Amino acid sequence: MSEHEHPLSKWFGERKMVRLMLLAALLALAVMHVEFILDTALRLWQVASPMVVGAILAYILEIIIKRFEKVFFPQSKKQWVNKARRPVCILLATVLVVFFAVLMVSIIIPGLTDAFTVLAREFPNYFLEVKNWVLTTFSDVPTVTDYVKDLELDWNIIQDRAVQWAISGIGDNSLLTNTVTVISAVTGSIANFLISAIFAIFLLASKQKLQSQYRNLMWASVSEKNNGKMQRIMRTANRCFSGFIVGQSINGLILGVLTWLGMRIFGMPYALMVGVLSGTTSLVPIIGGYIGAALGTFLVFTANPGQALWFLIFIVALQTLQGNILYPRLVGDSVGLPSLWVLAAVSVGGGLGGVGGMLVAVPITATVYILVREWVQKKKEAAKIENPA
Image (cartoon, rainbow, N blue to C red; front, side):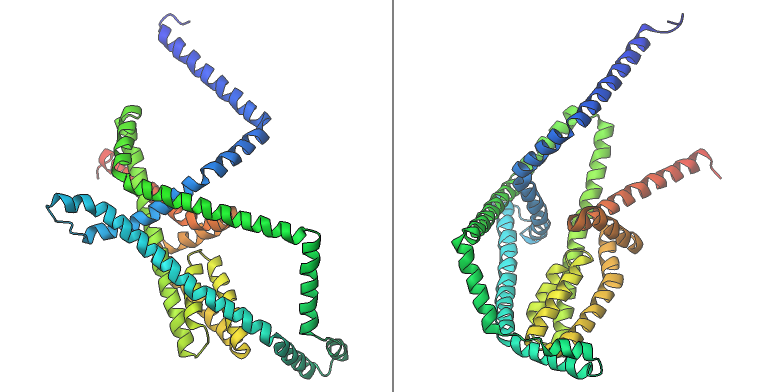
């Protein structure tokens, strides 16, 4: 030890070395038991997933609740009104979401059922029309015409084979087993969703108490400076995520209305249902538009095959307008992110995490973008103060 070195310096240096050694040991153990860690994490996720979904539902509902709270007698001095504001707004937001969900299902399900019924009834006629068109168009190509002439479609035979397959499936218990598996999966999903919904309601009802507990915990465990930084990060993230959800919803509403109006103007079938599908699927960035276009084309084809191509041209043009102009500007303005970064975030998020990555990539990128921009601005201001002109 140096003549002027304080004993505490050596002690703190030894503590740092011990912490580094412990960290290295933990990393080594994690690598050696990575399968066990991943398996444990998967089990924990399966247990906690209803609560995570419930927290997401609560966050989305809170955006609507805040709007209701602003109009539910905000200036009232009556105590019972102030106490009732939160429960009433939670109830109104829940009813509104359930109403729209039931409305969409009541529009989409009957239309899809009708479309499949029409397709099953008209498919033999469609097949003959396509066959005659191929024979006429490719009459100079004997290889194609000879092959198509031999193609026959007997719908009764197809139905008989389907019935025989179902009966044989029941006989060896495979169909029965699959049916039980599907029913169990659906029942489990419904149960998990109900648990998530109940958990979301409890979170919303306990918001003030949870906020108070969080503030006390942060006050006791984190320094004032770090607490201020964390609060600023969380406020920025909240602003970006809520802005993204609102922007996506408005974007889906506009796209659904434009799809409905365009189909009504051009006299296409299933205008309302396709509009609802396009608006709903567009909530998923980029890929949602393709899903809506495919479903809409299928529905129009079942009712009027001749209009399916025109619908596809119309929806591709509308989706291009929405994807390159409306979506970046609307969602980008909502989260404070330039259009270029919106498109980049969606592309990278989709490549890394699929649909879920697309949904969270934009608000996460917006949060990082705003925090970095504020950090750079502070550095510039500090540089001006240190080196005044």
